[in-house]
Structures are given as C-alpha cells and as structure tokens.
Image (cartoon, rainbow, N blue to C red; front, side, top):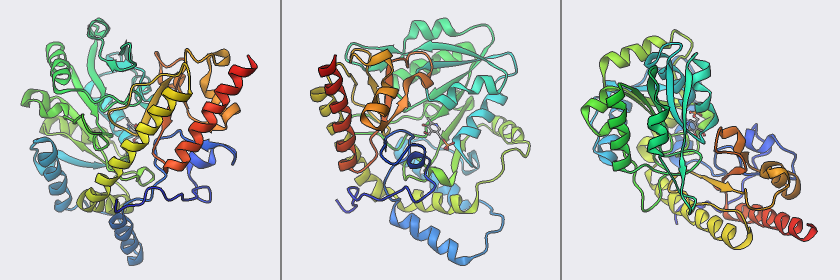
Length: 389
Ligand SMILES: Cc1ncc(COP(=O)(O)O)c(C=O)c1O
C-alpha cells in the first residue's frame, strides 16, 4: 500500500476535539474524524496557498463545479449542470437550511431513528415536528427500513424526508430498490427530500452508493443532496462541502434562505476541497482497503472476545454501532462502562434518539494498533466485570 495508515500521529498537541475532550489516559474512538494525515496533494495545495500569504475573499472557480459534475457522472452516472453545485461551509448548516425551505413552521419532518444527533435536532431548530419511525433491526443486527412504521409516521402535515445515506450510525448503504421505494413514498405524499450523503465515498466492497436524486428527474426536482470531502479525506475542521440542487427554483429558495447567516466557504477549505476532489482518489482507494481491514478486525474481536455485544459489519462509514444490551453492563450504560472501566471514549447510543439505548458508536478510523489496543481494553473490562459478578 502506497500510503501508510499505520503511522501513529500524536494529535493531543493540536486543538483536536476528539483528543482533547477526555483525560490523556483515555483512547478516543468517538467523533467521526480520522487519525490519519490527509492526502499529500491536499497538504501541498494548502501549503502553497498559505505561502501566498494573502487571504482575501474567495470566489468559486468554474473548474471546481466541473470537477464535482465529472465525479458525479463517473461514480453514479448522475449528470447535473455545473450551476446545480453550490459550495457550502458544513453539511450541518445545509440540512438546517434545507428544512427551512422544504417545510413551514408547524409542518413535519419524516426521519428514522437511531440517527446522527444533529439531524435529530433539525425539526426543533426549524419549528417543525419530528415525524419519527424506528429502523427495523434484523436478528443478525443488520438494519432496514421498517416500511409500515415509516408509512405510519407520515401525517397530514409531513412535508419532507430527512435522509441519511450511507447511514450514521448503523452503517447501511440503501440499495437502489430501497431508495426507489423511499422515493415513491415521497412522491406519493408530496414530500421534499434532503439527502445527507456525506459518507458516500466511504463505502466498502459489496455495497455501492446511489444518490437518491439520481433515480429519476421527478425525484431530482424535489431533492437537496449534500456531499463533502470532509469525511472522505479527513478535512472536517476545514468546513467545506457542497449542496447539489438541480432544480433552479428550489436552488434559488435555498440560496435565499442563507439570509447572510451562512456565508461562503473559507479559502483554505475551498483549496483543500478542490485538491481532494481532483487528486485524492489514489489515497482514498488505499484508505478504503485499510478501513475495511480495520472493520474486519473489529467485527472479529467483538464476536470472539466481547460476549453479549453484537454488531452487523458496517457497509460504509468509519462507524460501528455496537449493541451492548445483552452484555450484562451495569445500569445498561455501555458508554459510561467503557469510559470508566476501559478508558475508551465512544459515543453514547442514547444521543442518537429512539433505538439508541444500550448501544455505543465506535469510530474505527485510526491506526490498527490503536484500534487493537482499544478493543483489548474493552474486552478486558468486560472480562473483569464478568469475573467480579
Ligand atoms: C451524517 C453526517 N452529516 C453531517 C456531518 C457533519 O457535517 P459538517 O461537519 O460538514 O457540518 C456528519 C459528521 O459526522 C455526519 O456523520
């Protein structure tokens, strides 16, 4: 492998949220950024830009829009006009803006839980109701859409679907068939769609990502798609993403909704985004193989050494969703248990809404040695607890 993902880089001297939130003896496998250096071409582009020394206001260049359009056409067969691509700071502001134009206060947002916490907060932020359904969890731990529950969650005032695909935290990549059925449901009920597809580049062998808007022109017309280089090339601190809105009317409403509260991408974020989309693919190809091997180590270790903990191998993302409900953990609180007894920080499943109780989310985007160390600590804590009990 041309890129060395085994290298351990000390992030504590930086302002890293992941590494500075907990005391130094805690291994952080929580927030979704990676402990890997970004691709060299991205670092080089940033270095050159910094050396220029003048950081005035930026203007997106046509080449960038073309880069994104080419990428969408090549990877998904989805052809959009360059003007359909809008640069945005982060994906979180974008899905909040989308909710403001796809629904009016008092209307409802359709979503399925468990779900990435900032997506759960969207209805509350926009004065909307959360029309929620639980995802179905199959016997092997794999998740699927519960079509009956989703249909039942749609009320007379439901106006939009908030979709997360690939899904954080359950790691599913919806199939073309599932997406088709979802799109049909939205068309039947007249729902707009905001599709958070930020994890679309981190998809493992066996699955492939389909942007819901690419299914057909009628679906495209009602959809705001959000993508970013941030998860893919480990640039989330640079706050740069794209919104893809082919329908001119919907796009104009989205732009108007910014009302000067959300402004352009900062110039360093923009430079990194261009370099990543243009030159980042070889690094990404290697990264995916490394992550897949990490995922397999994780699944294997959990199955062999953590009795009562269950997971389905994630099909995408850097995140694993561990069901700890049968592991005999005190107070049914695996987050506190692993933090206090294993000194490993994970995300508390309860923050992902209904369906998250008794679960933790683990980020496996770290050097293998770090992952193995963290899993060893977790398994050790479970063994010590079982012996004591
Ligand atoms: C599904 C999803 N959407 C959005 C974000 C964050 O987006 P941003 O940092 O661009 O606001 C994350 C980060 O983990 C995520 O998992």
